[in-house]
Image (cartoon, rainbow, N blue to C red; front, side):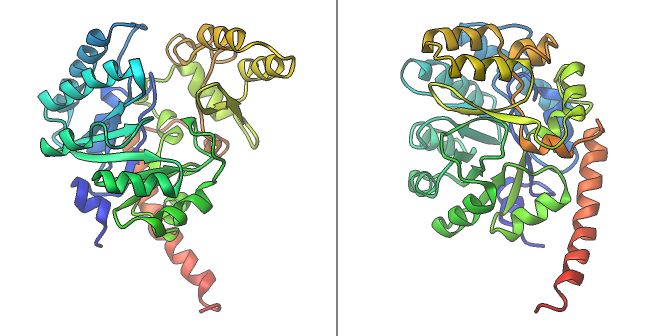
Length: 332
């Protein structure tokens, strides 16, 4: 069937693996692309430790890009966290590497859409920009991006302070722009993908479901914690710069207790830095450190390979579609 995201990106299925800090390295990225979707390298892909050096950050990304190319000939993406002010030095270095390595797709987030879109598109790179409101989607389209990614309140990781859910945000954005729309937040199986398409999206954006795969760089303790999560197993974590959704654990409970007790911004940030995603995702401190994770964790009960996960989802899209037609038969 015709699909704008498939045609734009040159992929078989309109499924994009969301970039995840410390999680989506070369193995996961290549596995998703080889399975027919679009794999995406995260900001700290393949890193063994934290570095404040922008040049080193960029060279680490170069190594990961070359590893992906050695593992797949299919299209893949690199996440460019644009940032603001002094943080632009980091994203500029990543952009330089993306240009030099001729990466086919860039997913730009946390920043204005007019910063890097022009230079990336001039190099023939497809640009997808992450947005959180229809107004942001319009601005991104005016800046010339090829597609927008809208993530609802259910999504894991860092996002804006808006509380629009996927069910409402996706059709709002689809109505506001003429370029392709990719929907994320709460999507973890064929039902979610089919729902995203029904809401007006051209593709699905999935992070947490891919975090819990064999190829993910998440520590085994983190994967086990996701599988163990049921029902209400995530919490919103307000920070001074944006909102995060995390897997509920001792970290989230302590952080909320500190906020309720009136802890200062300095104390809160010190706590966040001391219990970061690095401690959880890389070192395995799944109980006491931050695990960015979407509400879809409550639907995850196994750790499959990416190949098996993609095959199951694609097969079940058809199954779910036929079941939906049966349920609608008497209504239309």
